[in-house]
Image (cartoon, rainbow, N blue to C red):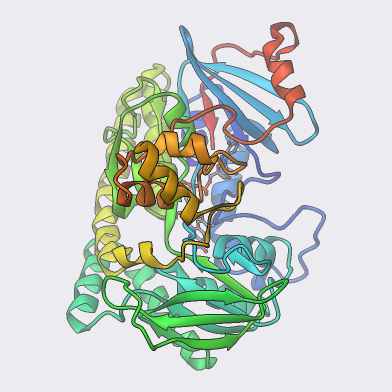
Length: 470
Ligand SMILES: Cc1cc2nc3c(=O)[nH]c(=O)nc-3n(C[C@H](O)[C@H](O)[C@H](O)COP(=O)(O)OP(=O)(O)OC[C@H]3O[C@@H](n4cnc5c(N)ncnc54)[C@H](O)[C@@H]3O)c2cc1C
């Protein structure tokens, strides 16, 4: 949205593709347009924060292709081709000399015994249900995970009327030195408001008697047909389970989020260079200060290129939009360059805060021991840790493990199991590759959609437009 706004202001033709029916992305999502909002003051802070940005994108002059899923992406002589399928069954195919991919991220769940039971969901899934659809994810909800959003998820769900019975944060409660360092990072990073907000969420949980359990992780979700009971246990500083500390809580829903992973599928398909950065979510595209990848004309701002949060995503979107506008020779170059410089300065400052935040929450290596051999590793194809371990000992290559067991080859294409898959493969002596071989389509689509794309006469190809894939 921010990139489209900058490109539109510079007078360029832009297409903005988004699979959601309404603009807003993950954090500024809106309730469906059929819902009437009786009291906007009760919609939460993101509803109001996002209104200005959404209006900017709506009035940018961009062709808005909401409700369109980009499933195919290719490089060609005159730039990039993007195929998107609409929720109404139609499809579009766009050709653009420059492409901005801002696909965001997704919750990082970790397998544990019982994680495939109905009632276990990602925190983002619960947030979507409660925030956008006004549906409580359960009657008694436990939130387990790690990161600054864990208390926020709890407060948000509680304010929407959900009965949150416990919040388990795997990291230890920050001591005075770590807290002071973090507060300093917030101050110097221009994010003091976010630091205060974080403290406010913890105070809210205390006021409402919702236990915030530091150094505690999920051990198991139990139940015959759905979650009836959640077992939590203490973990040490490396997230190794501490035996004998298990405690059971009656609950019908557990929301898990051990951080986020960037959606890098499109960037991977376009074969740009990647680098490993655990704090930013794993393998991320190598980028310049303008967010351009090693593929010329391909920009990747926001969480889709490394988890940085919504403030940074917006700044990077503007930086990318201005870079693409200057590259296209649009607008007043010195004005655009000055604006870009100012956003880059703010982004650099904000990254200082993000680093301070990351120091408080690090995924501990012990997380790789939270499963048993019979725990399902790949939920799409129902493959267990035992099966993956046995295959890895035989074929010693993670991509061959994938082919022989089908782990990572289902509907989510390894988004939820790849990390476990490569970890288990490495532990069994296979070479660990940090990325699986990407394949089209990026998201599941019907065969008819692909057939339409393959028949050039049926394509709608507006040439020469820069496309923003948000
Ligand atoms: C599950 C979840 C919950 C979060 N909750 C919070 C929160 O409560 N508070 C907070 O401050 N931050 C939250 N965050 C973080 C915050 O949402 C992000 O930092 C911020 O939204 C990043 O902005 P972005 O533009 O990079 O990505 P997003 O806002 O995620 O936007 C990406 C957009 O790309 C679209 N898209 C992706 N793939 C395709 C495709 N193939 N075709 C078409 N469109 C596509 C998506 O529909 C989406 O609209 C959450 C993140 C996630 C993943």
